[in-house]
Image 1: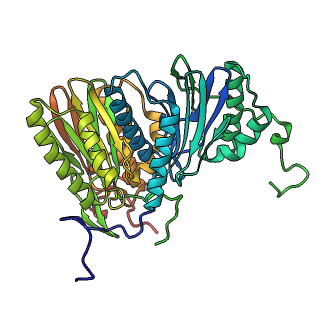
Image 2: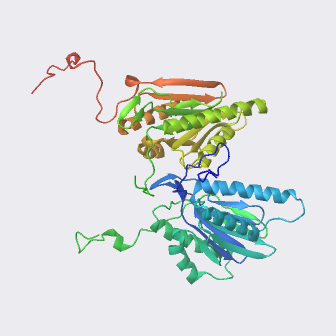
Image 3: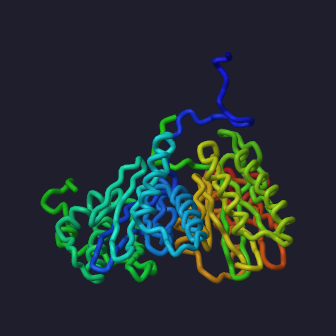
Length: 242
Length: 230
C-alpha cells in the first residue's frame, strides 16, 4: 500500500497549507437593537482597504426574505458570497410554494452552521454578522462571529461597536422604545463610533424591520460636535503636551 | 515576509475607469516592472473581454492575464448561447467569481468597463479578495493612492466624453509623476453605443507637473544665453 497516496481527486492540487487568510476590503461596526415594533439596525457605508477609506457607498445591511435583516462587518467579498448563499436558500424555500417562509430563527441557525463549519476547516468567512427579524409577532436579534460564536440579545454589535456602543445600550435601552427613540439611541452610538473608530466614515444607513416588512434608509450623514472650549487650546499651560 | 494586517498590497500600475453620459472611459499607464527593472515600458493593460467590455488589469501580470483569458473564453461561449452581446454585469461577475474563489492564490485588482443596451455605460471594481462593486468611477493599482484626493475634488457626474477622457489622462499622468511603479504612456479606451476607440498619449502630449521640466534633445539646443553658468 503506497502510504504517500494523495487523497485528492483527478486534477486537484492542494496548494493551501495554511488556510486562514487575511481580509482585504472590510466594513466596520454594525449596531442593532430591539424596539417596540421590531428591530433597528445601523451601519456606516465604508469599505476600508487596510488603512485607506477606499469605498464609501457599500451597503452593509441587506434584507433577507420577508422577515429578516442581515448586517455584516469584516471582508465584503465574503459578505457578498453569504448573501448569494442566502438568496439561493430563500429561493429554494419559495419554490416549495407551501405558504411557509424562512424566518429569522432559521436564517440565524443556517448562518451559524455556515460560519462554524468554515472555522473548523481553518478557512473562515471573515465576517461578524448580525441577524435581526420579526415573524409572527416575535422579535429575533442575534449575532454570529467568524469563529462561530453566536448569541441573541436585546442589543448586539460587531467590532468596535461591542466596546463603544454596547455600554451605552446597556444603560439606555428599554423594552418599549419607540421608533424615534430607537433611531436617536442608535445615532448616539454611531456618533461615538465616528469619533473614536478610525475606520468609520460619516455616511450611514439605518434599517428597520417590523411585522409589516423591511425598510432601509437612504444614506445620510450626522453632524459632529467640536465646540468644547477645551478643544480650542488643549496644551495651554502645558506646552509640549498633547 | 511578515503579514501586516493593516497594509494592503501595493500593486504596480495606475488604472482608472470613469462613466460619462453615454459610455465609459478606461485608462492605464504602461509600465510592467519585475522588481526595480522595467520589463515592458509600453504594455497594454486594457484588455478586451468582448466587443463591448474591456478590463483594466493591475497587480500580478500573470494572474491578471490568466483571469482575463478564462473570462474571455467563458464570455465567448456565453455570447454564442445567449445570441447577443454579453452584459457588463455578467462579465464583471465572471471576473469576481475567479477572483473570489481563488483569493488565496491570486494577487490582482481589476476594473471592468463597458457598454450594453440595457444599462448603458458601467464600471465595476474587483479589488483583492473578490469584492464586486459598481461605481460611477473607479481607480486601482499602486498609483491610485495619489489620486483619491484628485478624484474627490475633480469628479463630476454627467461629464461629456471629452471631459471624461481629459480627466482620465490627467489623472494617470499625475499618478505616473509620483508612483515609481507607474510610467510610460497613457492608454485610454472609450466604449459607447457607437463602438470602441483606443487612444495613446505619450511624452510631450502629457502635461508637465511640479518640478518637471520641458524635455529637450540636448543641453546644447537650449536657447538660454548661459547654459553653463557657474
